[in-house]
Image (tube, rainbow, N blue to C red; front, side, top):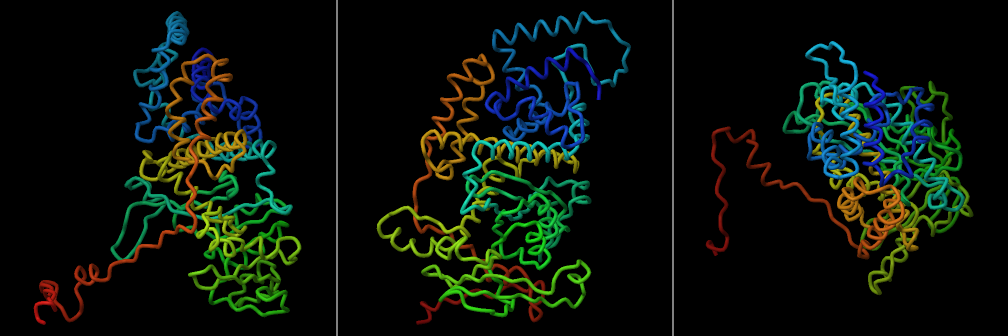
Length: 501
């Protein structure tokens, strides 16, 4: 990657103006700490690591635009602003006054320091190490916890949620070879990637994540993410993560877990703790010797909490928080005891601790649909796809950070604010943030943005649920021929019983 002091200074200034909404989070010190943690250098070029993070965030904001447009839209906005236009003109004049160098006609560098070719950007984003993105995400999460860490605590535990999802990628042969494709009864589909994320459910702030091909299992990726857990962390899991190795991995980190009990799991009751609680022991079958080879004990002690939501079948929560005095049964299942009164009197529903796990499902919906992480990825190279996904995750963290600050100023719960409206308010005020003086941004525009974000509250809808759509059996029966019916046979018409009667 080429180095050019004048070009680097110009693009650093453009970056600082473009991400002024996140200037308190993405400081030069933040980038420096992330670089030291990742073992890389920030660099002194127009496409250094800090500028590539900025371009990744802007690419996530403008998902419908091409990478070439992302490179030029900020520059065009600054050219239309008087003060910035003067500085850009001065930089161009200095660039033309430099000593000419003999270059190849294919060299992407130009004498104009405000121009970076799309080819140079494509090469740089493929070479950007993912370790820098992960280190930056970790640094931002630590900075957030220093200011708002109390929001992630409950009864002395730091609460996290873990779940996975799939991302639809552009149809490309290289992506199919690297990430794999989805398979179902109708054959091969478009390429997909698997994503597993650790999240703070009380603020929906991402903590860590991993992106891998669909052939890699979610449990394998979850075990890799367990290295980031701390003692006294409590991880809320989906029932699909029921794995003896994963549960012991979390417990060996000094952390705790909670998930639903699977139907086919047999537990040995040791003693009753109450009418709907018991202490049990799980001794799984180890016919292949996987747990013995991993050095795991033969069994694990669990606390089983039984409950039932009115209108639904009985459920059981399994956790290694064995002492009821640390987290009581009411704290786990508060939603089940208050939903009836809340529905009748329109009172706020206070969900139990385990039901906070659904916040990560909402985060996936906001990132994939509202931000456009699914369906708007442009890259055709695996490294560039990872770059785009990282930009989306960091952008989601920064927007959520702004929502927490807006909620704290009004004394509100950050989960009661609308992410869709917050994202829209950020897009509406972005041109003003880009072209205004730093003092005006700090004293007027940022407080105004936080105030507007706090005005959009999610309406309270108690006991609302969305049943899953069932597959139609008639459509499948008519499209797929049976053994007794030849392929060219026409389906029999439906008889009208009303006319026969």
